[in-house]
Image (cartoon, rainbow, N blue to C red; front, side, top):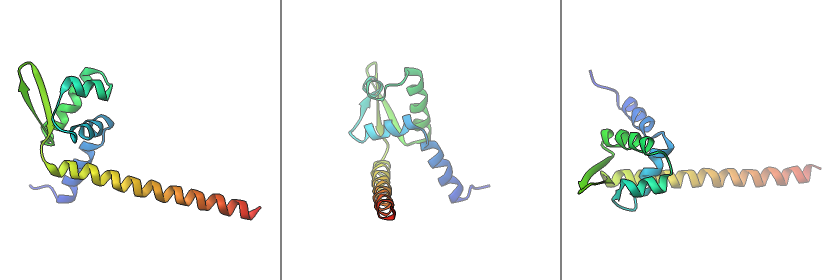
Length: 113
């Protein structure tokens, strides 16, 4: 039995729905990064980072490779980086719209007095 596309998409977005995973993906847009660098920049417990990296790796969004004793992670494909950039643009537009609404509300409040 196959899963409907909309359900698969919902599962995909649920998988992304964790702040540490999003932060890791943002950082990996800069290029491959060793776990120690991710740990320094994400600022969570090593076990928590390991757990979140495992989720991303199992989903196929990131890949890992060993370089001696160091494990290096990178985004598996350009589409994920595109998705992260698109999310940033959408949020910027949403927040800009809210800010404009807030200004408009404040202006109407002043004229109503």
